[in-house]
Image (cartoon, rainbow, N blue to C red):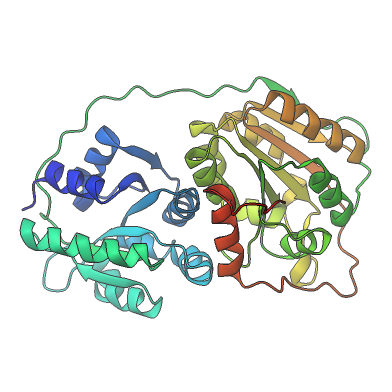
Length: 383
């Protein structure tokens, strides 16, 4: 067995001090160490944890993801459509529940057989973590080299690998909603293009704009391609968690998450996490057209959901329904003056674009440019 605090200190020496994940009994001692000694973000699910770690990585952190291997299936989308195309390096530890030849619960049997095959299929470098300290230390050094070259690396962890680490008592904080503005009167249903133009006009040279997958990112690119923009190309529903990771690692920047109703509905648990950790530099904007616009206009169930009340109950400091573009403009200007974790909900019309292009820049080029912006952009490069 490995002494957990020694292992954790070695990770710290290598620069890894930002953790996020979902608990597992095989990893509980490493998770306890991370909570006791490092920055640890408890995610609602494993896919969100991957996206949070990706955001922290963009903000200059060396990020670690912790999860049970059953959660690997939940993390597939961000691993293959966020981590892989954007070339974002994260270090992962996955428990090996259902390891062949070892008795376990029936729900772990199949995943235990296919865990390493899934990692291979997703082009994730991996190794079985040794329970011998000196060999594990050597493995960590190898993994760190992969991370330095923007290649994610995951360890598969067997039961009994880590010695016990007691979880110290931590007080739970409570985030409170201070401003709550519900829908009053008629909405004007501006187009997505008009809404994005309004948002883009309000940004400054300390603003990062993260546009969700689908037409939102594509239209923002057409309005203005900028080094402080990111256009999601997959990992639907993960833009809020990505924004949380960036916001926590780069509090000196304003992080504007531009979400869609279909995407937000897919991973609504992320709002609970965002609300709890409550970054004051994060603005979450929902452009809601009650449709999956980029796939043919199929209806979502957003008309049956009170997103403003959900954000309020999750602990967003401000949750505001926005009726028109003038009000959106006023809210953005007010936010720049007062800040605070804020949720804005604007209903928009469905798209009527005959031809909408896609970003010419490759995802990893967009990410490298954004990393330069966040972590010391080249002389003379503006927005």
